Length: 218
Picture (cartoon, rainbow, N blue to C red):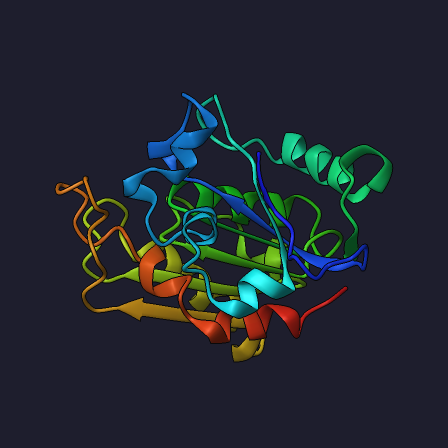
């Protein structure tokens, strides 16, 4: 996994941002998480020194690397349990402030792992162009902010829009079921056929996202 620990952490407990990559980074070496096509994602921007200060300084960011197709919720939850043990991981994480996000296949993976134990592990989830969804009723106790490009030719934005609409129909407050749709989301560098699929670039450079995450705890 790619791990970022703020320089000034000094053993204090910090929130965890778990980032799940998309299908384009499956398999291969760990360095694949930093590929050109992943521009805009937390591991790429932190590694390049371009990340927003609030992400760089306020979160422990962990990006596991999947060598198989898809993200299995139970394996991810076991990984989170490992991360929460300082004796095992060496990390000091605030267990009340666990957040999960991801792009494309990782976006749907983020939704699935958040829905695995409703309201019991993650305080908030931020799927970006998720390549699938979950039953909205399993996310009513978890804050959701979805990002998607209306022009996404890889994954239709209806996945995000339908989920948020369903949550609001279940009386989830708008600030706990947020949706940002980009009229012209970027295309991932090096993937010219994936038009509009890099909503990662504007989403993860949105300071308000990180402020919103930090407002949520279990």
